Length: 123
Image (cartoon, rainbow, N blue to C red; front, side, top):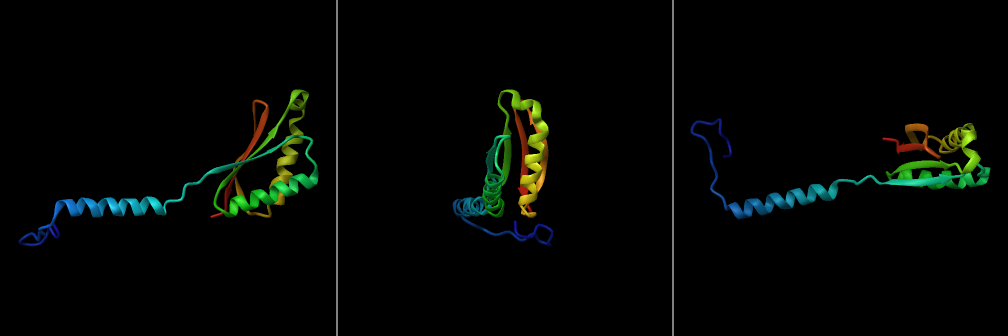
């Protein structure tokens, strides 16, 4: 049916196989245009040095500019878990070094022995 509201209704005679083929081609094109967002992970230890944070921040900027999300993890070992405030300080420093390349999607939270922060690219 082309125009069911018209008097009399307008219909088109067509090859059903060709119609199904063209429909599947359109769906395939739509799937190609969709962007799959992957999550890249960057790991720190609580004893990381300032220069290393800067290097990892530059890598995170590249990931965010490519449209990927970034999961930043501070991994605590042994007694380091008692000093979770150090992890928060490192993550805050890391986010400040990004110069607004991304937005914090999920703030820093301690999950087991890891402190996790998720960044998303700016729209």
